[in-house]
Length: 459
Image (cartoon, rainbow, N blue to C red; front, side):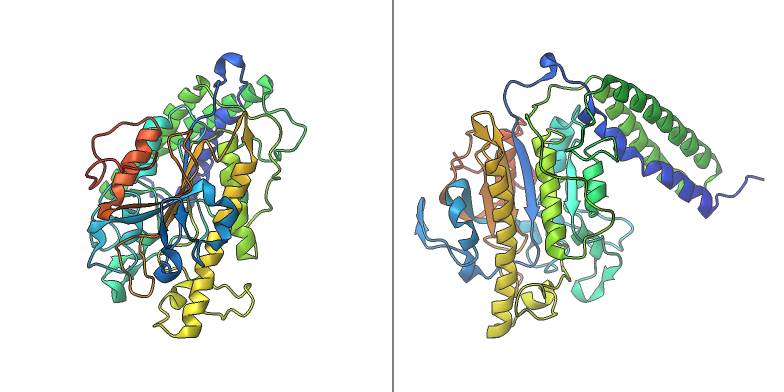
């Protein structure tokens, strides 16, 4: 009789599996000679998602092109007005007439029609644009993509909200319609994904280019991979049919890591910035203050781009119905962000909701200002990046889908002309924007999601 698979056995296997993301970081510390260095910076794409909409009357500006007026929500970006575009009239038609929150989140980067399921068979309706790019430009990078966030994933079905799984609103990145990409919410763990030596802060005296360090880690991590593969095969022989199917997926994911390991031994050319990035390894666990948590994750995203560890990243300020409170803002109640978004046009609650929306734009301003200050030769990190910021619904009180609140910052290495209000035709698919961003990342496709062509007017 076959020995049963115990919880302890599976947990022991999971413990090994949790080490796997380290393999993706192998090239981050590899010795880089002049032949492996890029002669100019690459283009990066960051997608920053904010839930629960905005107050449209405080978001949509007056004026046209370069001559537009900053609204209350956009006022924190005053010193950065020349660095971003206000995009208007984009939407995801497949989210109309459905739940106000959960299915809108995965559609934000895919445009897909999200199926209503029982939760065990998630279907987002498409691959998100960040993962589409990661699959095409991420090979050979220390991290094909980086997914960061604040909230832990939710479980269960929202029976009061149309019967959609809450998990749909917990993930922004999807490798395919059925496979969400988990986001890292612990700053230290996110930081560690970028560097192989966990005990070494960026500002330490240890030389990450040390060949002996690379050789040792290659040997240790390859041995670890062998252990994981053997354990997967052994568990498959003992498991049920359903277990075998799950383990087949697990085994394939391990093989994918193996392929990345092989690629990392022959890394593609990288852009090397000189100097040190002013960020030490964060403390363990989650920061007590929400504002500190957000800033740490944004700093780690900056570090990932600055070190060319990845060129594609996403960050979720919160999940679809963020329960975060903002009592750290003077005079704010204990009510959640989601709760205040349904202000019912009551003046006090509407003002409190608006303050939260504006606070998030302040964090964007912090992020963009730091990007602009990081020099890359004659340009800056912001000049060589594209930063998409916004959310999957417009009016948070009414769950409207049209004219999503969207900003696009950066110049994409000269392929984008910021500093303007850019109004597309009404009900233009947001996937038209994704198609245009893909082209600027060197990926040329005829269509993506429900696109009708690349968004015009960015340059």
